[in-house]
Length: 172
Length: 343
Image 1 (cartoon, each protein chain N blue to C red):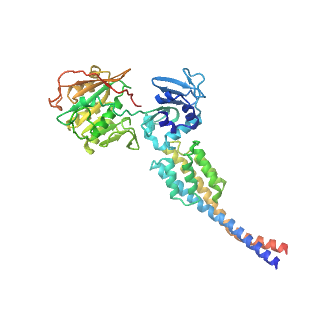
Image 2 (cartoon, rainbow over the protein chains, first blue to last red):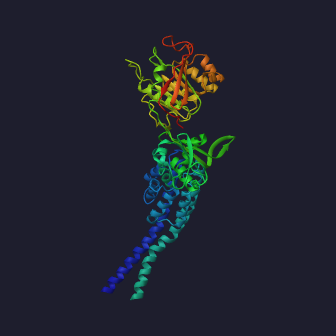
Image 3 (cartoon, chains in turn yellow, red):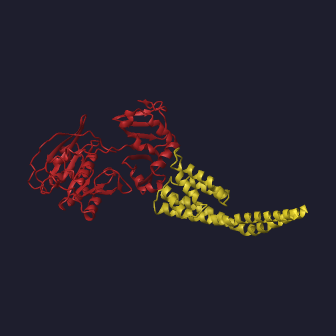
C-alpha cells in the first residue's frame, strides 16, 4: 500500500518537474520578445522623445509586463541611491538582482550588461546604434530559443513522466 | 553656496568640498574639475587648489586629482544620465542646471562640415555657481521711468564683462513684471508684460523651458534663441510691452531692436563696452544710440564698495516725449547693493 502511494508520488513529482522544465523553454522566447519590445520602446524614447534616461526607463517599465519591468524600474531608481553609483553600476545590479525571476539565460544577460555600459553616455545616433545592436543580438537569441522550444518542450513533458516511471520500475 | 550644487558632485568630491571652511563655502564661485589634474576652486576673487584632506593650496603641487571615474559620474549627474538629450547644450559648450548654475564643458569637439556639433571625451568641467540678487535694480529703476507711458524708457546698459549686467537686467525684468516701480510716491502703475530673449540662458536660466530664477509673473522667456529672431518671435506672438535682451552688437540684433522700438515696445539691452564713448566706437551700437532708439544709457562700474551706475539721458529720442527727459549728459552716481555677475 505504502509502496503504491510512493510510486504515485514519484510519478506525480517527475511529471511536474518535466512540465516545469518544458515551461521554461516556452517562457524564454516569450520573455525575449517582451525584452525586445521594451528596448524598442526605449529606443523611441531616446531617439525621438529625447526623454532623460531614468524617465524613459520608468515609462518603458510601465508598458512592459513582469518579469522584465522590475529590471528597468530598479535600474532607473538605482541612480538616486546615496552612494551615487554610475548608471552602469545601477543597471548591472538591477539586471543581476532580477535575473533569477526570468527564464532567460546568460547570453541575454551578457547582451543587457553590455548595453548598460553605453546607455546614456553618448549622443543620440550612438545610443540608437547600441540599442539596435542589442536588439539584433536578442533576436538571434530569440530564434535559438524558439528552436530549443520546438525541440525540448515536448521532450521534457514526456521525459519527466518516463523518468519517473523508470525510477518506479527500478524500485519495484 | 556649495549646498546648491553639491547634489551634482560625485560622493568623493562632495565630501572633499564639504570639508572646506564655512566662509570659503559661502563665497564659492567656481569649482573647476579637470580629469587627472588638480582640483581648483574660485571664491571671492581668489583661486586655490584643494588637497585630499580638504586643505587649501596656492600652488597645484600636492592637490587632489579627480579620477576618470569621478568625472564620468559628474557628467552623468549633470546630464541626468542622458547625454543624448543634451545635444544643443553640448553644441554651445555648457549645461544649465536647475538653480541657474552653469557647467562649462571642455573636451574634444565633434565637427560636422566645419561646424561644431558637440563635445565628446569631456575632460574639463567648470561649475559656476549662480547668485540671484533680488533688489539689484532698486536704486536704478526709478531713474529710468517714462512717465507718460507709465513704463520704463528704452535703456542700453553698458559695462565690461563681470560687472553685473545680467544680474541687473534680470532684476529689472522682475521688478517691471511685478510692477515694483519703487522709490516713487503715490505711484500705482501696473506691472508690464515683459519678454526676455535669453540666448545664453543667463537671464532666466531656463531648465526645459521653465525659468529657474524669479523673473516675475508677467514675463515670457524665449530660451536659447538667437536674439534677432527671438525679438521678432516675441513681438509677433507674446505682445510684450518691455523686451529684455542681453549683449547686443551684431547688425541683425540692431535691426530687430529698431523694429521693436518702432512697434512701441520699450527695450532693455546690454552691451559690452567700457562707457558711452567706447560704445560709440562700435558701429552698430553707435547707430542705435544716434538714431534715438534708446532714451537713456546706463554705465556700470564695479568697485570695492559695490556696483556704481551712471545714467546718461539721450535727448534726441523720438520715443520719449519731452516730459522728464533732459538733453545732454547728466551724470548720477549712486550705490547699488553688492552684487556679482552670474555665470
